[in-house]
Length: 624
Image (cartoon, rainbow, N blue to C red):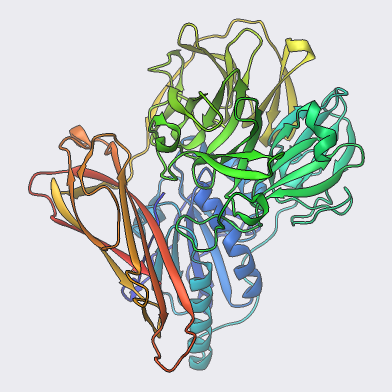
């Protein structure tokens, strides 16, 4: 997923065309119906963590300007499962989307607006003209400034119409669980479930159905305290604290509180909740306020999705889906450290800090290693730890960001589709919650074979071995329930074919100039008082693809040389160029003694294809 911002020419917005609408009470919505409103089109897909970040960024904006602003989600699927209308309807409820959503499975509206990345925002003024296009996340502040400017302009011109928009809230179902994510078995036999859709934890009896107690009010938010006071926001991962540490630490369970960007602790005796790590603000790559050092409560984190205790690391390993990394939280030392991943998105094996992940979402510790469900690459990966913070990553199953399917057999040919959970089984095999295939798959490290244990499940997202190792408890998220599967049965072989998502590919010459053009905010200029105020970092997803131009430097212009052969045969390019640019600007008025300053930081993931005689320049705009 890329990040990029451009001012669009003044052209009429294209009509909104798709299969149907959600959150409108069954009514169709046209651009004519929205005339007089400021419209933000959010091109998203529900697998994408960047898209989920944008949904959360937009919540306050749409609430604050509800009488003049209409946000329209245009759902443009990447995975086959995401094109299922029932799956989309469930996702809209799961993530609390409080605006109309156009179902665009054939990417008709996506193409009409020439969207190239998830997420992309397009701003349409009250007269129906496109005024801005923004790709990626982190645009809430700029969007609010633009909305304020458009309100002032069109209220003066008489072209702004205040009032309610077309959003109609759906009737929520009444179920004990609502889009549960993960579960753990407690020492007494009960089950603790991350009840993500209810923004709480639910303790169930061993039958997996009877509610014993709720921890959290059930309202989205952030609050520590007693179970009837505490608040979560879409909690996902859960891990038991080792028995020998529970009394010392004062809590028994660690929770990945995903949308709050926090780790929380829960004391089971009274259900009290405390904050263990994070500030409540999202870690932004290149951002100035991510924090320094190792103090867990002083560092920002990004969408922690899963957590697991590792004896080798002497810490809880945290899958940070939001920035494609693994972190280590040592509760005894009181330290939080970056463990693995470059923060570039992709499928690259190697030493811990050199490996690339893509929304790591499931963890299972096995001896000195960790099995990892890497959702966006549809991969099962292995993290082998040779010390607390040393080791390497290898891929067992999976081929890349855009290749997926339901195929069993040899691991090199097997395919998954956006897996979210993983568990080690008593016989040494590994179970995978193959979420978008609605299946539980089994990988055998001894034979290198993949099989299907069960299918027809509703978005399985978590797995727990129970009943002394005879059963596997499956968290069926979209069915709002837990399901038991008998272990010991031989898996069957399934071949549902392979799929590949094609993104627009940028053709470039073997050697070309990469140029980032920075536009400071109005009234500001580059801050050169203490030396260079810009930085450019370039990397590639395919080892050996970037022959020259890799690394970080202060110049926003660089000559890049790529190896020939990216994207052979006209297929989806197998090299993604990862570019991160930063620029600091301050008030331009020399009379201001202490000028206000701003750091602009954006990253792009650009599929590229080397073509002899191709374009010799690639220009990317960076806006303050």
